[in-house]
Amino acid sequence: MTLKPNNRIFIAPSLLSADFSKLAEEVKAVEKAGADILHLDIMDGLFVPNITFGPLVISSIRPHSNLIFDTHLMIESPERYIKDFANAGADWISIHAEATKHLHRVIWKIKELDKKAGVALNPHTPLDIIKYVLEDLDFVLIMTVNPGFGGQKFIKNCLPKIRELKKIIEEKGLNTLIQVDGGINSETAPEVIKAGARILVAGSAIFGKKDYAKAIEALKPST
Image (tube, rainbow, N blue to C red; front, side):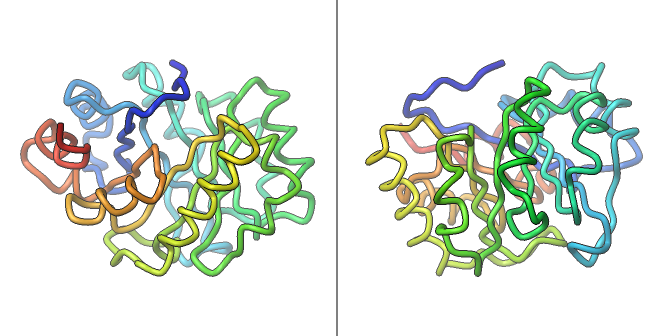
């Protein structure tokens, strides 16, 4: 599946908030409910103060879904594991600009494996850090919480960063997508969409609800 550069908003449930005792069922459920992407938060306990899962879990759920597997690597020196996650079934791979010394090299390592490449930016990280690689990126992930744990409160000060990134992308004539992750719910979704986000990552706002389809629909713009 490829996301075309139009005005549609795409919803990416974060598996971190799912019931880990029945992951396959949870993945199938959000796909049936209308999710576009499955967001996979990979944490190593070093770059962020938490540990989640790795390639084995991804490979185990890959046969159960046709969704885009969007793998967000919150790990130190991500270049060590790019191939492992690609082989496990990741379609998109994002790395943190703060986590590697050779950002351009890692981006192209992802692209050479025929995967979509993204860079994630922590709330305090300026856009300047991707100034010379933006043209190489398929998407940019703007963190609106400090990474490491689910269920955090949305940091409103990140909205100007989203607006600024959208302006830069438009001025350069790029098709780079803006993804936003952190504290996304029915109240904050309209704000990030207005600022320029195209992909919304949401954990408890979807997996924490009884009706996944209604929860996903609640994040989209009203028509």
